[in-house]
Image (cartoon, rainbow, N blue to C red; front, top):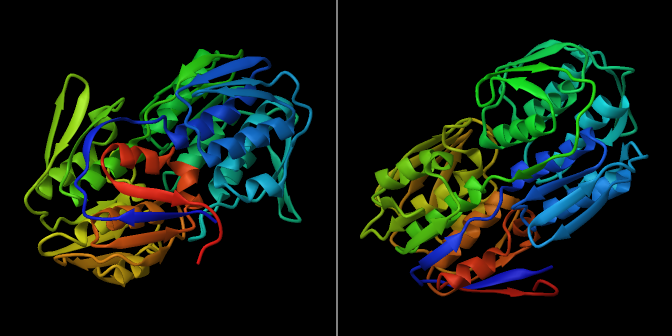
Length: 420
């Protein structure tokens, strides 16, 4: 397995372009199933999760052409309705093929999803919503087996706002008979991007970017072309990397509204934020101030930035608390940060961080995507050499992150081969 070797202590500086959003791509790609023909998705990041989704679509019978950051998906040859374990185990977002297959073909067999090795993230909201739309669903030997001669519009309410369930049911509803209303729908930008794509395909949707989505089913959709939104988590991670190293960087291809919650907290912690000529800049600060965060659904502070923020606060002045209300057990990065010298304790879903003056390099182990990012950030700031093992987690969600960081002055290299 590959690992990163980081020689810490370098202030980051320079300008970078933010890649397309992983989570948006993983919804847009299966949405292409809904129409026969060739759809074109621009600004698609080259990530392992995206490659996994591409392989899954090919498994279903689609043809994919991925050049530069443009993927063309021809769904006219889809003749297989099974998403096998070998693909789905690698990535939870694979369950996104369920709604489109059921909506267009009336049947789907999808393995129960896998992904990062932390916490239960059930898909009951997906299944309950599809049942309300008339689908017959059974669980057989680890597979979701769904059938529906024709999905029917339904009034759906989520007790808990869910990005995955909102996306899946939105895709299922666009070809259903009648009207579907999704109440307490997720308003994350990635759902808005998906909804805009479906509109381009001929869907009828009202309430985009609001908690109530109203979908009037149509009989047929057509292929379309769309630009994937920038990755707000990559942007937040890079801004935090600058802050933890005392650096100053600029980002292009990102809008402030996508990362507003992170920007506000960075300002609270003593960083200066500015935007000029389409470049979002963070300036170095003499000291980091302890700043509490509580994760919540968009537009709140994203849970996917919780681990990176924890790393940042480990070098702040004072005591801060990080509370995760989305995934209450998402703290596997903390024992590894402690190996680097951080002073952190956890009680239930709250991490209490007592800032230290410095971190020291050590060998640490990645456990999931965002935990891996936090270890890289800590390694960038630590004295000496940090080795981050199992960086395949990072390859799932960050496009050539080591190359981007090197372009900003970091001393980081990927070492291939066996860990030791």
